[in-house]
Image (cartoon, rainbow, N blue to C red; front, side, top):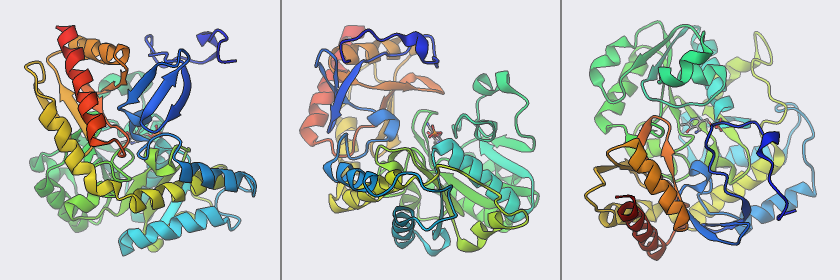
Amino acid sequence: MPNGKFNTAYLAPTSGEPVGLNVLRADGIYLYDLQKKRYIDLISGISVNNLGHQNPEIIKAIEKQIHEYLHVMAYGEYHQRPQHNLAKRLSELLPETLNCSYLVNSGSEAVEGALKLARRYTGKKKIIAMRNAYHGSTFGAMSVMGSNKFTQAFSPLLPNVEFIDFNNAEELHKIDQDTACVIIEPVQGEAGAIPADRDYLEKLRDSCTQNECLLIFDEVQTGMGRTGSLFAFEGYGIAPDILVLAKAFGGGMPLGAFISSQAIMKSLASDPILGHITTFGGHPVSCAAALANLEEILKQNVIDKVAEKGAIFRERLVHDSIKGISGKGLLLALHFETNEFAKTVIKNCRENGLLTDWFLFAENCLRISPPLIITDSEIETSCSIILKSIEEAL
Ligand code: PMP
């Protein structure tokens, strides 16, 4: 009933001021509201729709799978082709040490699995995470979230978690022989799209190897081409021991994964058996969508143009009110002076037909994370709308 009243009381709120856009449909880089107003989607449902909305190959794969089977059994028990085909394709694209995928439903759940795997495999307890990191909202994932403002109301969280400064090599000495794992986003998303320095990641990799602890890369936001390589770690020339994926991984369907070597992954299957269980993880429809998404991303060569497209945003978005642009590829943050100003620009953008957003830990920033298929001329149009919205906010 597209014209019926939307009663927000039935759905639990997440904030006091939701955007409340009434979505009619979505197509390519566009979203339409009930009044058929068209919006450029410059956030892709928070870095999810890397091929835009309603990609025909993804829709086709979903349609094919729904006629074969939906859920048949909890993860791990039966042979399900969509899961197998996806995991096999991933192993062809990833280094040998990342040849075994555990499929789950979401980013938070993949982070939970990765942390559990690191503790179980190493037999050690200490976890090191980064200040200003975001890894999800479940208790384990929230325990490695680097912001007291968002976590303290839910304490106590997991014990044995220590935080260090992102990109500060002087704190790497805190990694020691008691450390089970270090978890890091190669580009910190919610901190305002802050890329790790290559030199820092190399030192971090060395330190983890020396201390026999596992390096976890949370690529929930950076995966599937977003930063200019299929996975951000490839752009840095080092590999993690566990790779965490979600968001764009499912091609618009709910899907997550934590990926490691067969030898490491085996430790969740014994002593006790069923060390990690999920009913719906690796849902066949999500896996079919994910494989179509992955093949299309590779076939359409979208990744090759990500750096260039990011550069157009950086060139065009010049204004006295823009204090800087951070990020990598098409995961960008425009920095303004204040949160109020950023919020006004975001609101103006929406009125002018463009959807953007802020960041959890960088409230003075505006998020740019469009579908990777956005064309150069659509980027030009988007930048004009943003600049106009900035002028209107002054
Ligand atoms: N890790 C990162 C880097 C994320 O950005 C997010 C979601 N914003 C998550 C984990 C959690 O993913 P989900 O919301 O699917 O649980």
